[in-house]
Length: 340
Image (tube, rainbow, N blue to C red; front, side):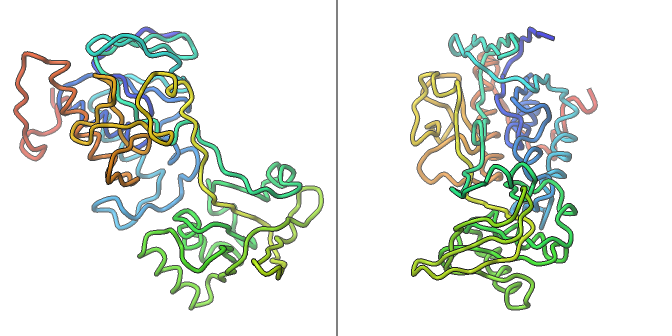
């Protein structure tokens, strides 16, 4: 059903950072709508790895991605933001104070400001160049995201990659997978130091086997049923790793889609912003989270949360140009809407 919405702020992207932006806007009594191409809230956290533990959310030593989204949903509930899910924004027209956004379903949103919280944009996995890969993907023998750890119980799992995802899943699957082997081309991992240290400790205890320095060479099996993963080192040495499941974690490809045609200043497929306000090169359009870039930018959810607060405060004078913002801490202010 096509919708026509008039609001203060349109948030493009309903992942954790976009959701927290809805909270920060609500705290300033700004109305918003959350728009996302996915059919449910949470972005990658929901669609790709709801059971993945996240370790750098303040006050949560560890929290699964799905639970983080559930808590954020509870946090924004008092403000009842409008939602357009399963929709992709195709066009952005107008100027600060009067933007019009149109979705691929024909919805129209009129807003005074826009926040891009598009994460990695239209994301997809970087696939390894292996012969016969599609058949193993179709059978589930090759997976790029783990939705349920229990599905891998007792399985012989080979993980390939050297970033946070590879390390985090090697740790998370201990005690569930029948065996875990991590393939990486060098001993140093591009992961959080504490996580890398935990992986070293797990390896010393025999919970994980490191296959270094190797890289993926071939998959062996029949009719989509994986039997082994062949790896090779730089000298031509080869190994056969018995396997039921291959998890290749080589990052996500990023496609900004229609956003790339909106004449925003871009740097390496990311939206350049003023770090003091999170405003883009178009007045009234702001960008936060992974889609945004500036000197010193860290791709952390917690930094995206901070950017959400900064953008909300920068938007307030656009929506209420004649009203001074007297900032109060939430501990003294409470949650507007909860008791109103």
